[in-house]
Length: 407
Image 1 (cartoon, rainbow, N blue to C red):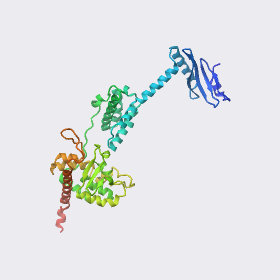
Image 2: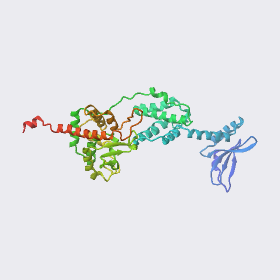
Image 3: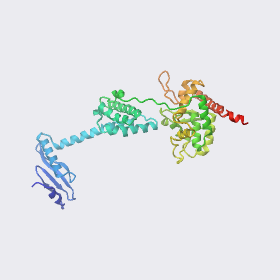
Image 4: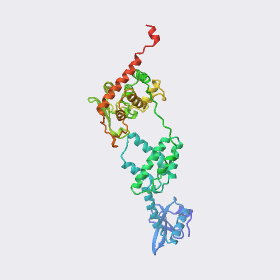
């Protein structure tokens, strides 16, 4: 007699497992522990087998019967439903192991990591922008239209530069998949022209000597916490990237040898970098050490010595001095130094580029090492600090006409 939901609900466990038949091989196994499991008995190639279908009530009576009918249809077509299920499971496992997400994580683990900020941005691109669309897809089934669909979502929120970096990362992932035999083609290759082009935005910077003199005078008279005051005074002297400045650690400072050595892991180009210290920079650091020396960082966070100053610290300082984001930015100190060291002080561009920690290569295409032109760069950094003092003093020594008349 066929089962009904009422009869199934009324079945109680006994001191042993019992089988209650439905029809066409389907039955309910009632375990002595109380569980109720759908099973189907069938014969294939003369051998009796039992197929697990589901657990009641998660799998309803109607669903169990539908699964049974599907299994019977496979048998009628000379397919063993149990073998077919195992094959489907293996195919799913293989697809998961070769999914875009699995390959991407494998690629990221094996590649040489970049700077912490770059790695953080890459992780965000993968998790937020690429995995939701491409993550579960077998890597060898991803088409250019699939990749473009993921990139369009990034474009639609206005993050054009992120979309560009996401395409680049996707291309690298597929090149890795091809190299390891998991894919035959790179669907990201032909998408470069399909993306919107971001308008290049340069960081605002002051490059006129008089304007720089006024800025240095404002910095010299600026009052804030010791860490912020030191950071804003050292920013033009070091002209390193703002993130590199605020995350500097005391262990990287060598006052005796007048240099700061930043390890490759903290640099954008993943290469060790040396900043020679001018006498002005040394004076600032020696005054700062008794104040923040108990922190790992030169410029610790106001709320916690174990964290560096926030990335808004220098920006807020400039705004407080009256400089808008269209006039000057923390990153603008680099452009300021790059321009004046070349056009006014006449230092070789090669020295300047090395001190900016740009990816400079020699005639044979080899990257220069961290000590390249170091003695000359040391002289350049001292000349730069002296020049900034000169510009500041020219502003400080200007006496307003009204003040002169009152003497």
